[in-house]
Image 1 (cartoon, helix red, strand yellow):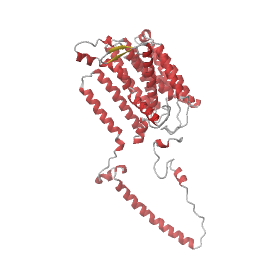
Image 2 (cartoon, one colour):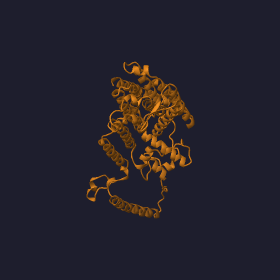
Image 3 (cartoon, helix red, strand yellow):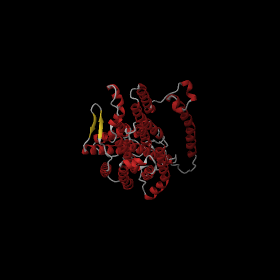
Image 4 (cartoon, rainbow, N blue to C red):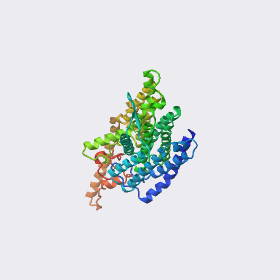
Length: 461
C-alpha cells in the first residue's frame, strides 16, 4: 500500500507542477478557442491540460517500475506498456484536437486504433464470468471487439461529461478511488497477482486527477481538453479491462459450501461486469441520452448541444459549484455503493443506506424547484427572496407612486418656465442601451441570466 500511495503522490505532484507551465504554453500556442454557444464559461480559457496529466502518468509509471514490489507488475505483465502505448496515441490525437479542432470521425478512428494497440500488446478481455453459466472463454475476435467497444464507450462518456469546471476530473477521481479499493481487495485478500496492474492503473489515475483539480476548479484557469478527457477515459477503461478479463474466477476458489453461499461468494466475480458500468454510470447515461436526443432531432450523434446533464442542472437553478458537487455525490454513491455490495452482498443495511442516500440526492436535485416562503409574521427577519410576492410588490408600488409626484411637479414647473420665453437646449433622452451598458455589463431591466438559454444557442455568446 505504501508503494501505491507513493506512486499516487508522485503522479499528483508532477501533474500539479507541470500544469502552470503548460497553461502558459497553451496561451502562447493559441490553444484558447473562442467561447462557443454550448460553453458555460465567460472568458476564453486555455486548453491542453492533458499534457501535464500525460507526463504525470509517465512519472508515476516510471517510479513504480523502480519500486521493490510494484516492479513485479512490469516483469510479469505487459499491461503497463500496453497502457502507455495506447495512452500516448490517444493523447497525441487529443492535443491535435485541442489545437486544430479535428473531425469527430477522425477522433473515433483514433480511439479504436489506440484500443487496438493495447489489444495487440495483451491488454484484452480473455473471459467473462457470466451468472448462471460460469466462466466463458472468448475467442480472439470476440475479446478484441468487446475491448475496443468498452474503451470507445468509456472515452466518449468521460469526454461528454467534461462540461463544467472540475467535473470530469473529480468524477473520474471518485470512480478511480472506488475501483482502486475493489482491485486492491482482489489482489491483497485473494492473493491474485493478475489484479495488480489494475490497482496500479487506478492509483496513477487518481494522482492525475488530484494533481490537475486545483487548477481546474471553478473558476478554472485551464481546461484539460480532449487531450486530458480522452486520456483519463482510456486509463479508466484499461483498469476495468485488466481486472475483468485477466482475473480467473476459479483462482478465488469461491465454489464451496451450499449453493446459496456460493452465489453470495460469487458476487465479487460478477462485480467486474458491473463495476466498469457503475464507475461511468452518469457519463454513460449522459452519452446515451445525447445520442438518442440528437438522432431524434435529425442531427449527428457527435453534434454538440446544451442538453447534457450538467447543463440541465444549471437550467434548473443550481449554481456552477453546486451542480458539480451534486454530480460528485451521485458518482460516489454509485461507485462506492457497488463496492460496498461486493464486500457484503447479504447485508440489508448497505441496500437501505443506498436507498436513503438516493432519496437525499433526489431532494438535492429538485431543491431549486421549491422556493420556501416565510410566514407573514417572520417576513421582516428573512431576506426578500423568501418573502411573499405581494408583500414585496406593495412597498414597491407605493414607492413608484411617491416618486411620480415630484416628477409631475417638475414637469409643471418646466412647462411654466417654457411659457415665460426662456430659451433652453432640448434634453434628449438617453438611449436604453447606453444606460444598460454602464451597469457592469448587466441589463438595466433585470439581472443577467447565468446560463444561456439552450434555444438561443446559435449565437457565439
